[in-house]
Image 1 (cartoon, helix red, strand yellow):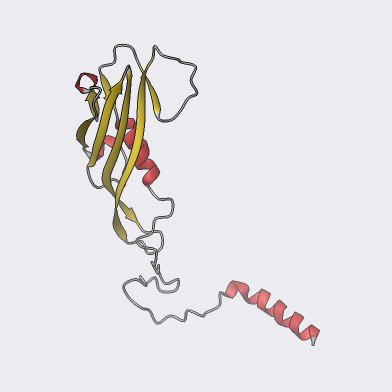
Image 2 (cartoon, rainbow, N blue to C red; image 1 turned 30 degrees about the horizontal axis):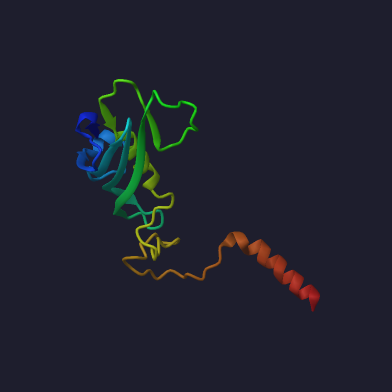
Length: 170
């Protein structure tokens, strides 16, 4: 996902880039990554505003079904010449170009953006019912005949204590 500096002018130019999913080393990626980047030059600086599109194949944390989550996200990067002020505060979206650089590499920013898009809690839908704790049936696809009001036996001692306290109050 590289753009030659010689192809960038003071006018905004649109670049359509595509990279194979294997180039990003993200196991959840199930589709190639497409990036549409608007790039322009101002002096020795290059400004990139891009939108990436792809998809993840994930496993739902509640029901264990596989599902595909399409992603579309934008990011910005500014490439500045190394000869300019080096004392600037380090910012995530500013890259210092080496003298004599001939290309802008967007791949690290695309990869970082993709990694940030993987959800911490993976759910196939907000209304996912999950699995039955007794029989393991996927409650999104079937109903089970298990008693859903069954009390966990680990609470029996606490329930006995509660009954004892209630009897003592009477």
